[in-house]
Amino acid sequence: IVFHDVIMSWAWTLSMAHLAHYDILTDLPNRILVIDRVNQAIAIARRNDTRVAVMYLDLDGFKQINDSRGHAIGDKLLQSIATRLVSCVRNSDTVSRQGGDEFVVLLSEIKHAAEAGIIARKILTALAASHRIDQYDLRVTASIGLSIFPGDGWDAEILIKHADNAMYQAKAKGRNNFQFFKKVM
Image (cartoon, rainbow, N blue to C red; front, side):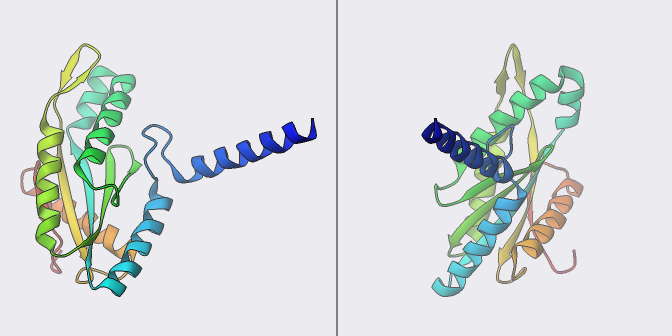
């Protein structure tokens, strides 16, 4: 009985640790974990003289789908989006859900900012393709903001904030596009 209690306690601790760092709906890393991963990627980039890209992604039109089709369909759509986002990046990168219909993507150890632009285009194309959710064919697009270490910031919080600012610029420019952070933002 003691051994069983130890195993159950250990499993509960692991479960709680997982819940603290992962989104319950998509099982993607949450904001806490992505901040840690961005800071780790920055440390590696400093040593290896590489870049880190942070993308802040917000879905265009998700609220209308959620309101018209219901939250259960909206949740399944978010899960489909999460799967597509993960398929667009390398295993060494991180896709996280910030909450609602917002995601952060970390591209670690890139050589040039243009690489992030290529991935952003790939993501826009993947997300715009129809999502088959139950009996519905749903279409959604995204607006993406990008920030690059070291030019746009030296820590995770600043890079995420700058990518978020750039995402609002992408929305202002018609949605379904990406914009790099600029100091004037």
